[in-house]
Image (tube, rainbow over all chains, first blue to last red; front, top):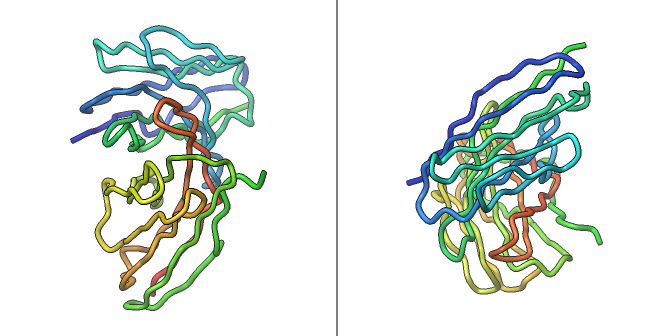
Length: 111
Length: 113
């Protein structure tokens, strides 16, 4: 089967940098993606890595190492509005149709 | 575009009742999925579809049925509701196999008494 591990909670202060790690075990790996969810609302897509290395999108970056089955989401210049849950997810299954999510990391940004 | 829409937003059922949660998308996406999210838990995949007429089981399929007769619609049926099915249900869609950007609906909050 598949499993994804990420920390349950992370706390940081405004303006700081925080890294949320994700390790995975899966068959037929297609790529690692990250989603943000505020207060139980609809999750929204943040970033995706199919190949090893760093992808940067504004204040957010995501990294993947396929050999280590490991990735992370890096959030820079933290703002209060970044307080949310962050999920890593992997694609697998029939034609890559399954997008499986980790348990989520709740990020609290303090002033 | 409305994106992914779900109805109803809230629902209360009694144990043993059946109901259908509706999901529709107007983006012509091939792939659609249903997830449930329980307090403090991640999103668990119930069923998914890679195109009209094709469905497959996810991580927690028991007690749920799906069908995909059109590209736009992907209803989720609860056959005989149980309190363990109290959850928030999210429908999602994405363009196809090689695109990871998945769009979620606003969710249906279901309580089974």
